[in-house]
Length: 443
Image (cartoon, rainbow, N blue to C red):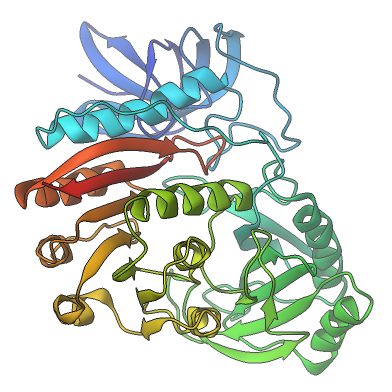
């Protein structure tokens, strides 16, 4: 049996969706069935699609929609000015009810994979559908003088524009337009294997304005940096930081600060102490405030006395909410130095170390009344066992990956915890991604 080749067009009926937000269908190929995943297609669609990747061993074709012959009932009006289908927002044209169904079902399947039978609440939606995203990381491509910023198409080095994404805060879109104009006028070089240059731009909006971090393999010239300084002096940008990493890697998180103009810290939209613009933040400030409050309310319902642990604390969102509830004793664990100044302003005990180096030490904290843990996407992994053994009366696990969440939850259940609620909260419009909050108490 010969499968269609990369670049070939096929016609397919879309019957369902997968966890990556792709429409799924089955292709009859000379009497054999082949699974097909199509970016930009939704249930009920009849589409032509271009093959982007062939997985022969799995009998799977990964494609993108090239033409809609018939659209199904779950499409809504497209508001994004960029050409679809978007690799970053595959559910942009999907009815919200379908999007929430996909997000919730991801959590339910992950729990079942771990043999956990617990009901999941309906998804808590954004208060606004668009314009809420307060921080964005965009890769840089195109050519010198004609720069494109956006996201890569899966399985390729093709960059798709995202500078006018409707999910971005309006201030970020406006600032990005001025920034691109300056980068092009000043002939900033684009990073290639042959020529080191600009790799990515990170923008974050705060109360004072928009801060920009330029990630590059080579520092800008003096004249180029002066042009960026002018954007700050005229109030177009709040600050600009140039982070340089001369190494050829796929990561844009490394490097050191080479130069900066404007303040280092800005006030988060969700309130609280000023933070480093390059530090972690939740995508939606309003959802973040709501999540912090819900978690703090749960942990302090019986008491505000004793110690509360804020694991993977970031800039201290959960700690701030706990302090507002009257908690006096908090231990925050965070490994990112960019978060330290924000945490120090809270007057709490801080361990600036990775959790794997400090988890065992937390057993000396006594008495523990509650714990919130918000690990990175990979989850707690080996630290789940150590943290579960702390025997905190109440634990809230926050996760952006349902599979990692379910594995971590299983460990807590094995140590005598009982789930009181599983609440999905949407931070990622247009995508199948979902944040999950698990509320647990020790039996």
